[in-house]
Image 1 (tube, rainbow, N blue to C red):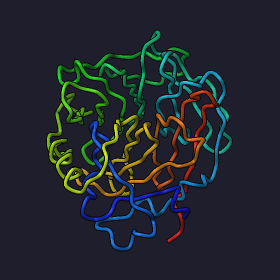
Image 2: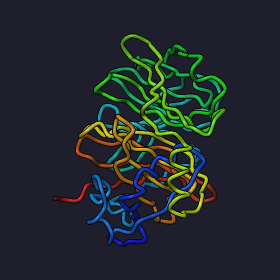
Image 3: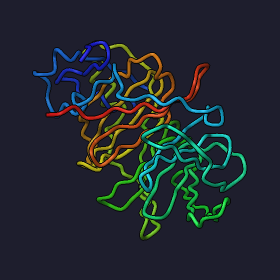
Amino acid sequence: MNPAASTHLRGSFVLALLMLLSPQSCQWRSDSDSAGAEGSQLFLDYDFSAPDTVFNLPGSLREISGLALWRSKLIAIEDERGRVYSIDPMTGSSAVLARFASGGDYEGVEAVGDSIYVLRSDGRLYRMQADGSDKWPHEKLESDLTRHSEWEGLGYDATSHSLLLAEKNGKSNNRRVIEYRVDSGQWIERPHMLPSASAIDSMLKSNGYPKQKLRPSALGVRPLDGTAIILSSTPSTILAVDSTGTPVDIALLADRRVRQPEGICISPDGTLYISTEAAGDRARVFVYKRRAD
């Protein structure tokens, strides 16, 4: 793999991965240093400098902001209109599946069984059932835990049958993950999923690494092992965190076309699908397949 395309942190400061969830900083480690690093090197299975497939999306999806897998198709939303789109994962062709609400700031989509969930930036969830019509009925789910914050990541954790919401901006420097239990309707904060921003900041400072403002823009969960995969769009970065908050790996998405990644989903075989807003160019979906062992 080209070292400039996928870079990694060295062992002693690997916990800096989670700076993507707080306005702190991180430092990269090159692939040539991988052998001596601690922990899993999950992203060495992918070549982020050379996606296997790139789909150009139409103007209707120029503000694409969420991506999920459902019934062998990709489904997507864009952040200005309450519509759900389908995208063929083989050809990239897209179509409107249904409308569900009026305009809003929609930031994440996820499928759980026959239900589709959409996350609005203020933390409200919309739950819909695909009933064959062109306007799906929906219900609104809200919690005090998500108020007064900006939310951009939505993923499904099959082990706990829960949706995970990632905070982009909040009252404190510590970014939060909120869990919505699909069966019970409970909203739970996961206090141990992320280390404190001050602890990470102290580690970075002691190692003399510069600060860099990074925030999450999308979240997905790998069906293979339950690892949470988080995107940050400034700069275009991908990180992996396990269910206890332990960082697993980090990589820089150095392909210049990956300008503003806002959506991610992972297939059962480990294929990554990453969507990017147009950002002055074209909206696209990038497909990265796992390299053979």
